[in-house]
Image (cartoon, rainbow, N blue to C red; front, side, top):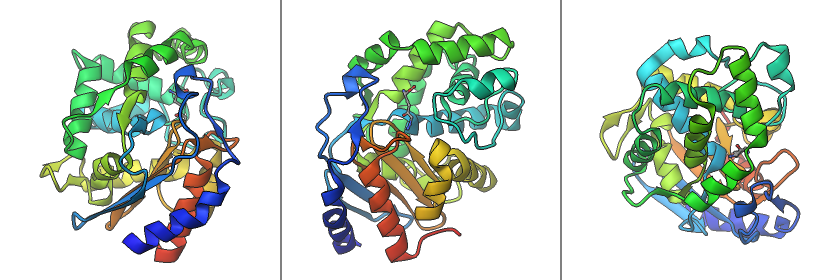
Length: 302
Ligand code: DON
């Protein structure tokens, strides 16, 4: 596995320069574009990594999985009264469906859906940002994980589109908390700073029937873990979920920081990071690396 990861990074490195670092969040625009890292966390506890796997980056929408898992943990099936688990076929920040569908987001991974999940969590936790940070620290076993307040503040200053989604949902009575408070929590989650190894470890429970082996905690039931994986497979990469299924064939979740996490059920969790994005807002080189890895090890769930 170690040799394979080194080989794959060498093979995809020539693609660097073809994508574009996200700059709609100004604090992300300054990230060095040519970075590339990968980590694999096996269900047997082994970690393999290559490239810039120990460099922390902004996890952005990857945090939407952690929020969803927290919400399922305390409210279970009840959450589906407020949002769906259907793919949207639309960009992550699109508003068009939300108006047509009476303020009910298609799924928890588009921004509107993640905001509803944050609204649900906000009603449950006294300090939502701290509870999320501690949850993630437990999942990856790294007590040093923090949220980058410069990134969170930058996002809050440029919040118009997310605020529009939240206020639109409020007009349909599908948003109960204070919009500005929930936006601040959401941006704090997105601004969590983690590296590939942290993220591969944090997602291990989804490859392991909901069980986090290194903390010994049952995070979700086995059934709930398969359900989260199914939503990642159908909606984790937004309007590119079909392409990701075709090329990689694994449940996955991307973020505009350039990270992508993928789950190999019963075997491993993987995180790849390269900040340059393709037109759909997903890591261009990261996707290519995962495609090669999945093909070489024959990991596609299809
Ligand atoms: O709300 C936003 O637009 C960002 N904080 C997160 C978007 C994101 O990561 C989409 N993923 N590819």
